[in-house]
Amino acid sequence: LADGSVPPGSVLHGVADTGVPFREVAGIIAERMGLGPAESRGANHFDWFAMFAGIDNPTTAVLTEQRTGWNPTRTDLLSDLRSPAYDDVFGGSHP
Image 1: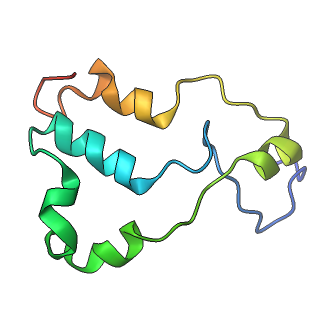
Image 2 (image 1 turned 30 degrees about the vertical axis):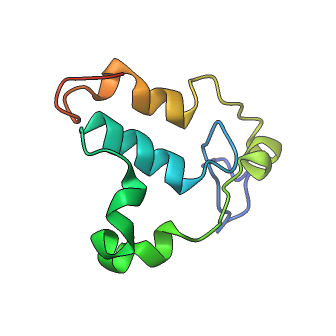
């Protein structure tokens, strides 16, 4: 990127999957932490962050792939969160 192949100010997304709902991410995190369904806590639990969590704003790496030739080679986000790699973060357990 330092070679100028991507225009200055470009926004690049290094994501392997598109449109992962925040609800699914929150659900896996809640499950891993033994908190039960995230929906049961509602918007009050998330306070000021609830507004952002509810936005439908899918991220895609299509432009990143087109501009840089980059292609994801690792696992997708949800599989990664379920993996043992996060055991220390989530208290040493995984489904």
